Length: 328
Image (cartoon, rainbow, N blue to C red; front, side):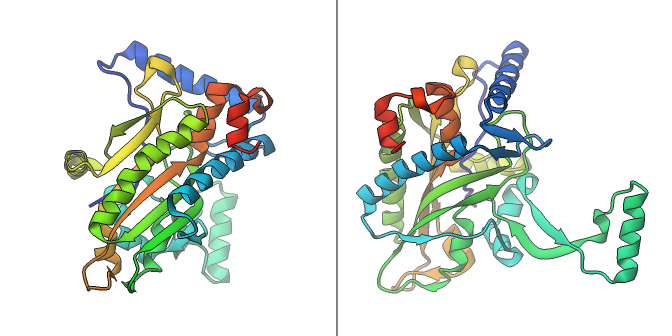
């Protein structure tokens, strides 16, 4: 089973210590408070859930400009641009196996479909200050956890004579409330997804590691490529994570948002899924083989935060080459 998580946490430097952990927690909170005081993020009252200012969105747009430029240089006009809403059918969510790997990060949508009597019961509980969400039922939809997940159902069947390259961009949700602004519950990913031949899938993943490093370098960020694994849930998850690392399925590009207090924060992730999605979604190549897939995902908010902590909270003072790379 293969994950697709571009938001692995900061990893405290070894050996861990209570003093370092406390300092890292303070650094995260201080950075969040500075972003809010500067008006870049708008608090909602829930950790990890923020509004964004126009200046923050301009940074996101600038990052996207740099990412799309790299995509054009790598693939020309080949990628098919697809955009999905941040909600998709539960049936398709099940096929990703995300619930087996990350149940703690999952978001399900519920709604009310009762009659007047049921509505009165709901209102009575609400008036009494009691929980009322027990009156809701599943809407049959889930919040998207990785931008590429909705794409695989659209590819079910035989791909035809050509493999598939997709340009995917959208909001994702993961339930991991935190004071760390880099661990947002709602965030955006821009992905380039390949589906087709196994060897080409590996080349796609491997090719985007230096390409992603170049994008970050053009933005004035000091990034490092490291072998990585997803934070799979539970005891079995630890085995999956170990296997993923041993088999070199995932590489992350990390930037140190908090200096020497941690080994860094993943801002880009390059993943080889093998035939996981091809098998689960019934995707086959022209010769009848189960399709393999790979993706690179740019964590847009995390890259924005890396830029803000590296170059300062006011974009007007950023280095000219960085502003030029972002078309600011």
